[in-house]
Image (cartoon, rainbow, N blue to C red; front, side, top):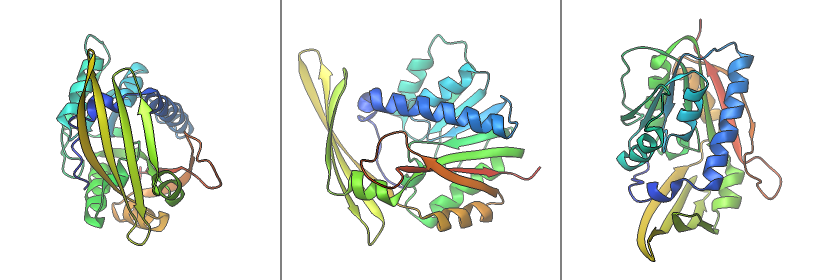
Length: 250
């Protein structure tokens, strides 16, 4: 799995684009749940980050467990949940190795979290864990970046993002031969009238549909479909993300 810690990046993570992405993911997720008759119950969000999606789901009646291996991201999530009466718990865990005390009706993983799984055994462990956590009839929903996204958005491109809390520069590249994308995030956190600099590295892998489908089925889940999910414009033909939907047999 990619070794990015998000320790300092967590302070710059919530900008307008990432928050808007979570809102769009929430809307599509609620539509999918309605389609398959999945009513609010227990929900596990793998790689929950700063908790935006988890809190949105809790706000419509779900009992949510947000799981992430970054303590800094979870600190932000808990801060956002502070004083709320929403039913949400945040756990510091690795999504490749976790155990729940009771089954859930929905497992999700958004914002290319699955692309952070770099080795086949990491993907296997995560999907197997998701299948184990699901109650019969429950859904697994997650997104992945397409190769078009890595080629156009990561392929030798630099992005600059500014928010009230920070300014960040993303220097990105994509190695098509090895299906690996790398990014150096250089950020400047606002500290009154000055800035505090940080730098973190991100590594992601492109997983082709056939590999994901094989792994989902090997985990004991039924692939329902994968569909186009374009929360941001790609700037050309092709899809930015695919949204995968799988179900545990009833």
